[in-house]
Length: 224
Ligand SMILES: C[S@@+](CC[C@H](N)C(=O)[O-])C[C@H]1O[C@@H](n2cnc3c(N)ncnc32)[C@H](O)[C@@H]1O
Image (cartoon, rainbow, N blue to C red):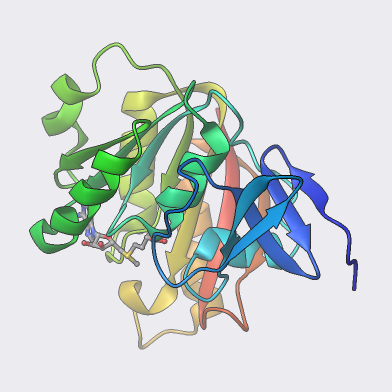
């Protein structure tokens, strides 16, 4: 166990095996995370059981393309648990657009957007990316992230990448095998999704998210 604060990636730290991000809004928690203080700076613990991206980090993710100033398109922002940590990482120079189809999730997400000036809500269906084009005008995205429970997860990701992600930029997708086909073996389902992703991406890494998430993989690709 390393009991020193260690920077794992730009803006992502580890302390005693706990993953942390520096709180953009000191004093404010977003969910049930813990607050830590080092050298008069505040950090928030990032829970790998509540965030597939953090689960990926715990499982040895090598490519973490989010940094200070990144512009991120995030599909499936939900109430903003993972988004809040990315908001910490990209800082005030960055911008994250969170797309979600659920009005209920969006309602809570709006409160988070009021507290954090670098995240923006879009109520929309990631299946039809052309419909939110006018809300994304003028933004050049460095990273695409997706976590939606849909049967055509790779297809949705490819469609958005084609429209909004430039060549050589990185995309990360959390694949939930059971949302695609619960009658087939998760490994086969994930392999079929990777085949679909390879139409638009060079796959850099595939991470099995167990024990944090059953039958889930986090896949990182570089846009062709
Ligand atoms: C597992 S949750 C995402 C959790 C979130 N990424 C996090 O880590 O905090 C999946 C989200 O995808 C959203 N979703 C499902 N289908 C969608 C679609 N077609 N377009 C946009 N969002 C969708 C759901 O409403 C839900 O909020």
